[in-house]
Length: 149
Length: 122
Image (tube, rainbow over all chains, first blue to last red; front, top):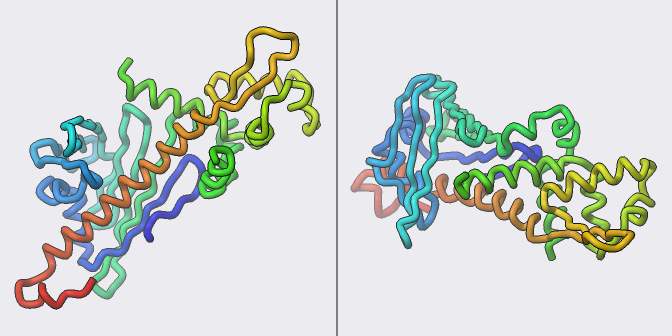
């Protein structure tokens, strides 16, 4: 499994692909690739709903569509870091969430993608909140489970 | 304000409220049943006003509620609100998990050739 977690305000997702780094990077930055996988199960992202303006300050916008009822889920991002085929980052200004992907060539034709995503906007960056973030995301999840059974 | 925005604001308040050990302990205590401010303050070496301040944060986040009448105004855990936060975490994790699965499949399609497609493992 591929997703691990760190702090409460941050999540890391890692996956190894059996493909060269250039190709994996292209998949994350070209609409004709993104349309194949950007929507989770039950959700599609038609190619005309994907905007990629691949430079720092450029737009990364998608509108995912629920296959069952047509509900649209728009997402508005702005690229903050582009270093093909090593690094890709964007911020979603509306919610303050950032996503930074690093692509590592494992040397055997495989590529590791690691996405670090900051979950929680503004309030979490106050000193008071930072001080409380020592508890790990996993412990938090376990804690929630004990409260909600 | 759009529903999504309200959701985000609510999540901000919930996560900020949870980012404090004392407040998490208060919630754990309340998961066992209602309690008054005095009862909640008992295990902590902090003043009643300090506990009241924590309770206000939890109340604003909707994680607890307090009855408006009665001298002791006992606090109650609002477990649905915690579900709201944990649902969001799980949804976000699931979205990336699905994306990665689909990207794997897409890359397999791109890199496999007609001759080895049938024998490709996985």
